[in-house]
Amino acid sequence: MSDLKIEDISMVFQLPGGGAVEALKNINLDLKQGEILSVLGPSGCGKTTLLNILAGFLAATSGRITLGDHEIHGPHPERGMVFQQGALFEWMSVRRNIGFGPEMKGVPQAEIDKSVNHLLEVVGLHDFGDKMIYELSGGMQQRVALARCLANEPDVILMDEPLGALDALTREKMQGLVLKLWKETGKTIILITHSVEEALLLGERLLVMAPRPGRIHKEYNLPFAELGVNTDLRDVKKHEDFGPKREEILEMIWDMEEEIMGRTDS
Image (tube, rainbow, N blue to C red; front, side, top):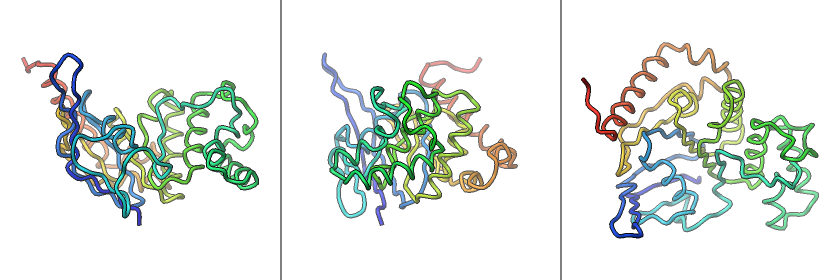
């Protein structure tokens, strides 16, 4: 079991001209293998900083993170990252992009081809393997990014606003795909989003983070992700608890944003 354990993670950035910014303070979280977690919070609450520490792109000032039986130090294929913009290789075909990670690891080409063909089917791009990246829509490019991440067979998938740049209809389709992949692959997924509605739909656990220094303000355990695996997401939004939870979290985040801006109610 590759459970993820975050223990007392804090992050302080030293400023070039002196002084420091405390981005995260005493973050603690246990995530079981196969759970899907969404993370929300006002601007500057450290969501992306936390994700970058989990990815190994940043070293925390204090605390530690363990995955399974070992501590995380630096990037590793066991943790895959999907960015808001796909960060794909424009000069390569869809097929070459998806197979890039295994190719770099020296996996035999026959195995790569088999894996890529399977993943093209999984993300609904079986007819687009030989297309160039620039020929694809934004939604298709994010499908390629998901497939490329899965090709490395990570234990944990980290997603930083992966659907934020998509139009509403494409975003809804991609939300359904994320839930499908979560359930079919059994991967642990951590997703950062600014959309309360998306966080409710895609997180069986949902964290609301407080403003700087970033810390966990409230956690929710929700039924909507599980419901969304086999139910149209528009029907999930009609669930009697969905609207009240959305309004509760929206109000919570708005109150934090007003506190950050220094505004008071008139």
